[in-house]
Length: 309
Image 1 (cartoon, rainbow, N blue to C red):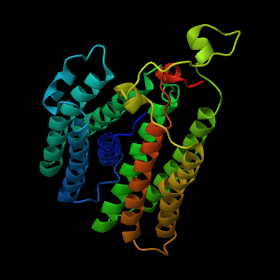
Image 2: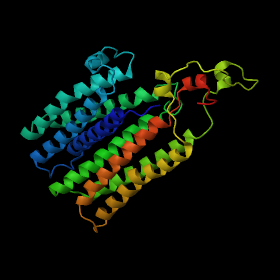
Image 3: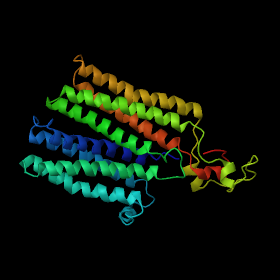
């Protein structure tokens, strides 16, 4: 699949925003933000929604006609994209009320915190299901895709939560340990996904055409000029380059941020390193999302001469 940069920005940036909002809401319910001033909590919430907004705005740039983006709300019963749009918009007033509840200490603050967490996670899930529901792309049609989308949001949002908390002087070692553990779990899940992705599964040109007893090859291409199918579904990257990029992505997304967080946790590093760790992780997640698209193989490629999806 062709990796559109606007979609990469959308999924990574909004994911970090939803994750940060979930961490903020969990802090209210679990009590680890009790030492934070009201203004500090509101700032965390504003940062979260700014990231979400940047992601949502960038997603419209991928549309052929952005002015028709409103149509995405009209197919809620059948479309994961429509469900994502609806839940993303519903989150805004709930998050605004949650911010007001923090600032004025309303009695409904716990309810609004819980609603913010639920809506943030639901929106993340609907975004992931846009891809995971596509049976035509084997690399996406797996429960590991929603799990990874959730995990990426939690580690990027959690690391940003730690960085801002460190700036406020309210950093808690227990949260450092939790985020480190989540990074390790996410790394393990990603390695499992890489292993599964490399297994020879999915349709072949033989099974797609029904001629399973003989070798099938393309004699003539269906198009004499480049088409939408070729541009979007026929994206090609050398296998050795993909392997090298996987290694780079693993180092940048997981290993380097984990080392920096451990340095702070061990007491040898300054909290400013958490901001650096988050920036490095976000760069790594952009590369991960690029690989997510570049490694995807749509079944339509079989009818362009490819032997296996």
